[in-house]
Image (tube, rainbow, N blue to C red; front, side):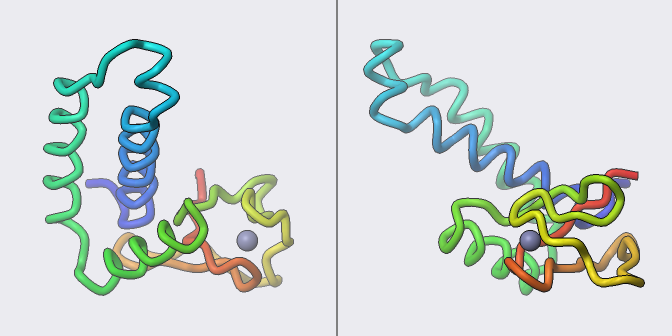
Length: 113
Ligand SMILES: [Zn+2]
């Protein structure tokens, strides 16, 4: 079972792919809307969203709306990949059903290992 932050990272990936597929520039480049792929992604999104607690999903959605992203990967063990702020000393990877947000940019942090 994936942790909550992993699920949110995957959900973000789906959202970004959907955004690209619906981008007028994509459609202009490829000459068509990839309806089949959009449908498959929408289904995957729906399934994943059902596994995420409502309050966390709402947070995810508002971050997506505000910043265009909601999840940042922690790089070099202690740095937010979105704003490059160092995390405060003592910030630990969250439990499987919890999330930690960057104290500077507010994005949900995904710890890679
Ligand atoms: Zn940050």
